[in-house]
Amino acid sequence: MLPCQKNCPHFFEGCHKACGEWKIFQRRQADLRRQIHEARKKQKELYAVDNMLIRRESARLWR
Image (tube, rainbow, N blue to C red; front, side, top):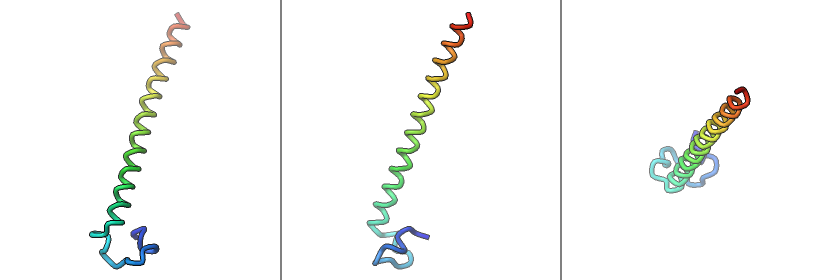
């Protein structure tokens, strides 16, 4: 089901293929997915740095 079916007064079957509002909605969703992906990637990078620093400090303490 398309999210606009309940809210759009101009809805008819298949209209999303040419609808400007639908294209804007799709673009916003893609941007949001991209932002989430980038945030998760950055978080993984930070965790990797944290792990490296913790391991380095642990090795130093056990010498």
